[in-house]
Length: 380
Image 1 (tube, one colour):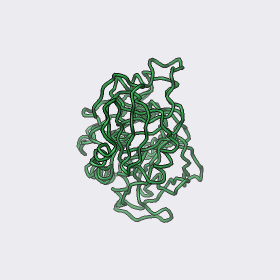
Image 2 (tube, one colour):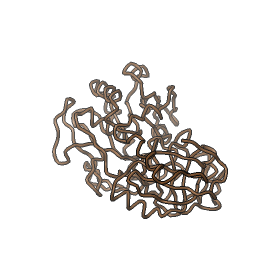
Image 3 (cartoon, rainbow, N blue to C red):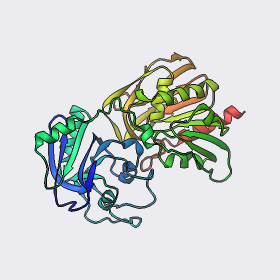
């Protein structure tokens, strides 16, 4: 990605998709060029959390909400230390932010972090195109000296695919750190950072959990050096088929029968550890309004999602695995995609969506309490 900050918002920009579809608009954020997988997110709020979610590494995010930026940018809502999206696509950027917490505008933050975007295009048409054709490689180019359409298309088509991409080590912490429990400490959890969002250890800390966040390359010895009551595997970017290291680590944790909880990428890792496959979704689930049924209770939750891959597990039968019986615990009601797994003979479960939900619905916050219950039961 190459960037400049001169003239943003007034110079021409173009979005080029790998199938040759082209959208023309104006520069938004930094001026330059960027490449990634074009995906769309249906959230009407929470763009700051979306942009700073490490799971969006190497993705150009299309906002389906028509106006973006009206609440500006604050210093409290980041999910990580930086913006991770490769590019940002909006229809109608707010001219002036209006929120008491705002410290600066969204476009100013994009410029400051060198994130190339485009505005003024028909994002509804783009979203329909991606739904029909699927998520695909794309490039955003802005500036006065843009190459020919054919040249830009060739550059997009030369980029790597998301399928087969190993990205989790790119976004994970390099050094372990601790998020202390809020109030009285009840449990210790080792959290494997595969692209963890800041709100996740916070949700655990609120329940009296001291969270030791470990690098994606952590070993079994590293995990058990903190004497954990439970182990957590986080969300993260890329193709889970490349995550052999985390799968091997989770297999070790399962062998010890330590209470285990996984979110998103962590759900896919559990699927692989149990012997299931994974596959790439046509256009994925991204947004804060996805209906999921918890099959253990029958309740339907409105949930927050960000995943382009899913676990290939049977929906209507209990599977025999190396670690006992396993079943699909949650399913998306839009398309029957597996949204959760659980073991029936030992304390381990995962969900594909985001129960920390910042910003978003809190219907699934009970899953952190379920993790606490597993740890309580193991102690008993």
